[in-house]
Image (cartoon, rainbow over all chains, first blue to last red; front, side, top):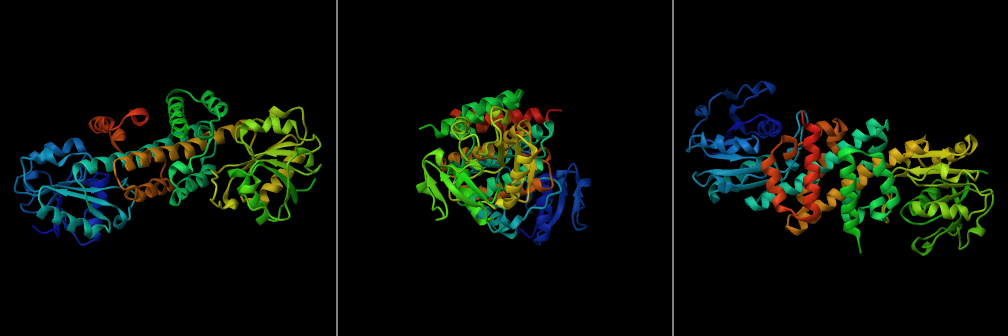
Length: 250
Length: 250
């Protein structure tokens, strides 16, 4: 098995980005299996297949599919085909009845229409043998300058941290924008603040960077804000403020 | 009253930054009243005073103090002295027994030791008369290219939005780092993700940018993560995930 040519399953946010990145880095993607192949302009060198039986033997098949679909898909792939998947959470020991199974996990958020600088994305590799692990590391190094080995437990923790760093901060910003739009506050005014929020963390821990009413213990402002809010926004404001106050309680 | 020379009360995070910014922009700060003046290298042209009676008449005094201290301080300042304060939340109508009272609100997060590009900070001005408002606008324009008028109600909403955008996202990142440190996950691996989280919002709304288990409705991963967490982190994870699921429910 070499890693110059691979097969790919799934052309969602992760699969589409990896497909483009492989091609840009001279990895041939000879076979693509996807429910939504129409959504991507595939290279003429890539063949779209609509059955798993059409995947070539002894060639890596990379699964870029939701976590819940990985197990059943792998069960239906010929055991002679080496497989790897891109999930942060699915443990490798879920596949102990199979050889040549591995993980190819890019720690990044992927959205349709956004091109990622793949060379800066940290990849975490795991495999059921040292030899196979090495192959997956080599493949990842064709894309990225930041390739590490991580076992399933470490990867789960990386993924959980990533949920906070990306998913949860993004949702807080979604709620901020929803509130601003509803109250006719121009969200553009908040952009310099958002930029500084992140820039600050270059030389400062988030613990030290914290400011605001909850940090100061300014209960009057907290109460004023809670009175402005309703529903889940009020619940979020109350819990996050409580959490801040708890973190800075002497 | 001109705005070439002012007095300043408070040398905390906001006051220290504004003090430096005024000097850099040729606004003289002739008198400084502060409990902590030792903490800042004051220009030799600035006189430190330790009584409010020493503040010069007919010269603007800018209060950079916590919200809870503004009212009592202003009550103790000679009514002939025009005053303004930097708070996002305190309403101007709290001072209806006084003339020449105004608001000089910079929408940014200030921390000790961090220099802010003041020219990009949005300032929001409010005052009890059109003439005084104009003076405060002129003063703000000496520092910043982004000066607007906002009444107390609009300012409160801007401030509440800022609490989400900065205070709450920062706290989420604090929890992320606390979890990572505890679990020996190298937080450096998360930096490219954090950068992309913000960069993404240049061309995409946070609503569209959302990814992750809660967005996908991946309850199995959510449950796995909840099992990893305890205490307030678990509460935060559960509520924010619920809020994401609620936002994307069809």
